[in-house]
Length: 109
Image (tube, rainbow, N blue to C red):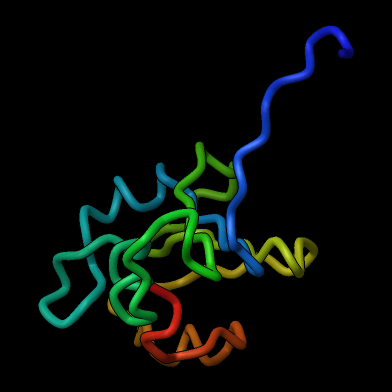
């Protein structure tokens, strides 16, 4: 056994979306039907994601990405790391999911 190797954990993710936690915190919500959810929670709800590593899509909040746009949240699709998105407060989360080519169905649970 190699030194420093750790045990792996299986996940069913086929896609990974990274969302800046600092941007989310600065907006204090701004998404969802009432505008009170974070982008991460609103996306998970829109896509029907309930189980973390058993879902086919992983949506993860990460530390500051260094862009810090006013009134928006920075988002990265790990499958397209060269194209960062700035999602403005109140943006249509369903339209965002379609733009990211994420399936809008309950089979992600």
